Amino acid sequence: MKRDSYKIAVIPGDGTGPEVIREGLKVLKAASKKFGFRYKEEIFTYGGERYLRKGLTIKDKEISNLKKFDCIYLGAIGHPDVKPGILEQGILLKIRFGLDQYINLRPVKLYNSEFCPIKGKGPEDIDFVVVRENSEGLYKGMGKFEKKGTRNEVAIQISYNTRKGVERCIRYAFEYCRKRNKRKKLTLCGKTNVLTYAWDLWQRTFDEVKREYPDIQTDYAHVDATTMWFVKNPEWFDCIVTDNMFGDIITDLGAMIQGGMGIAAGGNINPEGVSMFEPIGGSAPKYTGKNVINPLAAICALGMLLENIGEEEAAKAVEDSVIKVVQTKLKNLAAGKMGYSTEEVGDLVVDNL
Image (cartoon, rainbow, N blue to C red; front, side, top):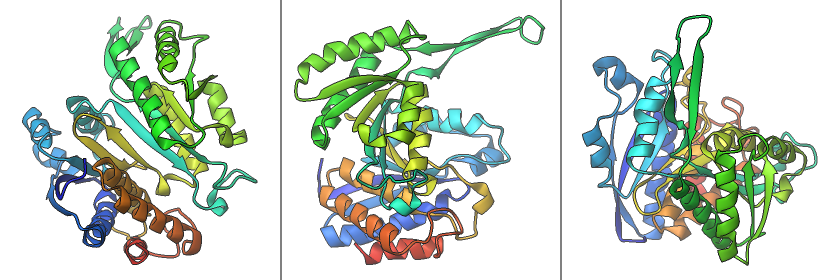
């Protein structure tokens, strides 16, 4: 909800995270002056470096502290010297679950056809949103080993889906599709022909909820077919709703067809609480400190953050500026190929606000 002042928790994170967050905060400062709102930022050092120094990921009391903020702005979590899974589960998933950020929102929008790997597709063809359930499914971490370490070992991973979790995600997707007000079409993406328990629940819930939204056109696509249509006919899609695992997979393909990870942003949403916004490309440690990483994904995430807190005019100005920079300035969206440094791209966005 729009207010005069906001409290923003900033987690720059690892690798190139602090570099892209620096440019996002530069844009935030300019936007606040232009559109007349105030904010106070507080930096938190959660990430790989802290884990290596102190053996800490994020504590329960630190999660509770984050509830005092209006939103969270995240750079990236992931360190080459920390075993995969420790930071992701100990920080990212713990924040998402601890703050009940049950929606992952991923706009997939092409700004310049020159950066699209699909021949003949332009901005009018690639403009859709994936609504991913963000707190259940396979990411719940439920399962067990049987006879571990033997030739007869069995690893069981459980996809945990509740009616409450599925319904609130589907209902959010319908509401978002209505608010988006473009094609007003919502696609359920699943695998009903094989995953007969979880996706029976998803399909039944979808069919029940859609009766409350007669203005929204609906359809269904298997996840494997969805990946094909993303490449062949992305213009078919407006809004897509899916589970945690399928959403994780198809949004990376979505990032590629919109121009790459350098432009892809996402939000972890609690509609009734604190939400977190981030570039989805990860920490990219090989580019750390080189001033070559593309900050536009982080700046687009900032735009999503502004829209979420009610500063919609500022959010639109940020996106419009990014579009202008992508269409008129950059040679490429990839790190080191933009024709500008990280810092210079941030300056270009500020100049075009």
